[in-house]
Image (cartoon, rainbow, N blue to C red; front, top):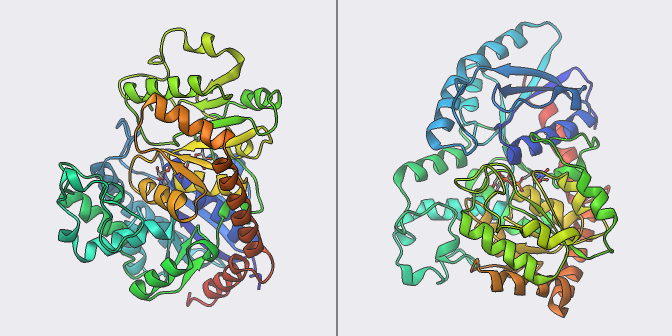
Length: 449
Ligand code: UDX
């Protein structure tokens, strides 16, 4: 059922690329179903309004001016959650007073947990957006029940299976462990993002085909309706860019000149940082693999350096036209390019879904949060990626050749094609994601306003 345009949905994104993107995509999906979409965002990383002329945007004071939050600390996230309370409340009150504006609900990114308090005071219903895999939340919830089973662990246990969380090992647990344990403030923060407060439902950028049993287990825990309607980037009708950084499209011309199925795309997403040693090992691994590669080295992504200055002297000249390095790529377009054969990735959830939907198998180099969990599922359960446990040039070189040239690499490709076809089936009429979207529209429309 499509709704009459006068029902509006307010979206509150967390202002970082991997979270802003799925929220804007969700906005497009809801808009296509007839809702008016209002995006209330922080001043920091304001979305580009002109890419979404059909949305109404409103900026909230966040108190973060002058603070470097290229990597958000817990303190900054709490500051943002505190400072945004009053601006959101004022905006919602004004909106409710406007005649004819029927506010159906507020959808917020789970990191913006302040939203539920504000909305509850105003008696407005909220829905939580989970922009990551069910596997990630499931691992967190399981650990919260008995943290002492997992932490602290011994160095000798790093590669041992972790209790009740197959296929995760201790080293894959989804918290940054310091001295093999997790500081209490980090556990508290993770509890805050996993809590749904008084929210009436949860929307997921995932698919039942991939994560049904985990979603069912989580639903037993949360006891509210779940709407897995992914993959958002394919369910969304509009194809506007959601990029915060400027995309260097010249790499597409370079890809056009490469043979079909020959290029490894390398990117570690929008947030993580690596050290100089890892950059150098990666550079030699790529160089020695003899495979063409397109490598995103994001400004600020190598600790202690502005961008790619830590590369070995003369590296780019030595590689010549076999390799291309850019600061930020139009990733979806890159993955869809026929020249691209593999993706060396940090396994962020957006990158994972984008790769699966373009049938590009993976080399998994996870660093933090949900990434190690995703990497284990990709390599051990779905078997569409090879995981790197050691970041060393010969290991990287071997992994690249295995992915691009071996029979094992071809097996990954076959499985990822199958997986993509099943997901596409879920997007058709009567498919799970399609049906869940209809149920979501009915659910939101029936909320008391
Ligand atoms: C963060 C966490 O790291 C991730 O684990 C979590 O799932 C979401 O938040 P991020 O590092 O941003 O994610 O990774 P990811 O989820 O993969 O999102 C990155 C987005 O940036 C993707 O949509 C990708 O297409 C885009 N991107 C990346 C570009 O457009 N160009 C690039 O050069 C690199």
